[in-house]
Image (cartoon, rainbow, N blue to C red; front, side):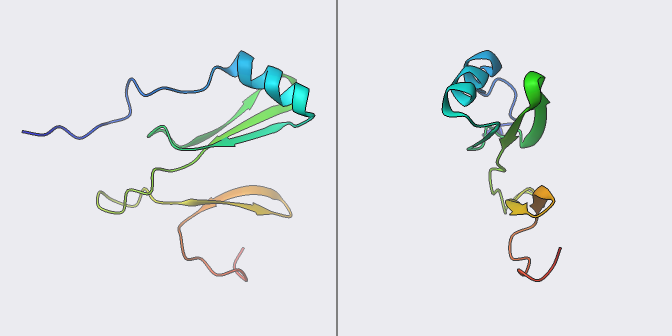
Length: 85
């Protein structure tokens, strides 16, 4: 029987290393591909970390997009029109 991966044990970024690279680049926000644990975190020093969804359309409503709006980043289902906020 095949077990579905639940995200436990998935690799993630090292916050200290990521913050060092963000400082070097003069950036405050890191967006990266999925680790089966989509989330947004605030790190020390005003840094923000966004992990994208894995787009699993076969097992519930996990698929989402991360959209940059005038108010900041927003998570929403795919296919939402550009005029909806």
